[in-house]
Length: 237
Image (cartoon, rainbow, N blue to C red; front, top):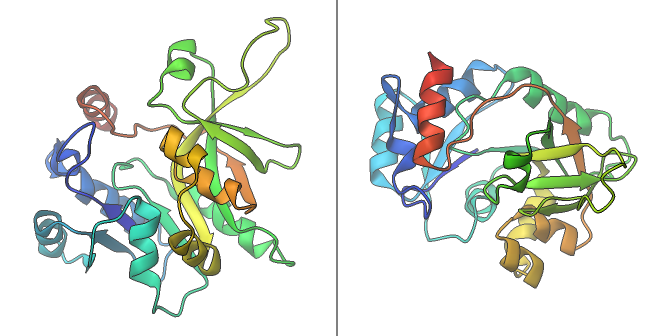
């Protein structure tokens, strides 16, 4: 499921921006299909503009019935009546998604015989302090089993002791949900930490859900700003 909202606050109409001959949302959809990992791939949108461009390439579209606070809420509405076990949320601004990383988060559920994991997501190590301190970069800290402790736009952990080594991880906006966890997300109200940080994954933590993080070293460009789009164009070429 690829949630695709036309009016993004930081970069309006970013999903329809040209990325080397095709709109960003088309690049993301085609990348998801190309992995060959999924029974079905859908773009979930409230925009007729996005719906039309996906339909033109023969893609599957689900129109959202209402406005939503987050991409996960939008997906929950779309899958509510579907007979599915695991739902993958790929953000529409992630045209560099790859099959290796997506395969790893699917494996989390195949190996979770006791069904203790509610969702899985990706993180990648980062070392550039400008990126670490950038509020557009969501960071995650994990326990010794790589389960998420917290997500933040601030640098976490805070480097009070400069001599202690710590790895900083960037959270990549790709989630794999058990359907029941996704439906819980839709009905549970937003709490203060999520509202303050504007990071939807925090809602799961605030309600005691278990998020397994999977490390990946595959890097790409998430398109949040016009500057990101410029970097994406250079990377795509």
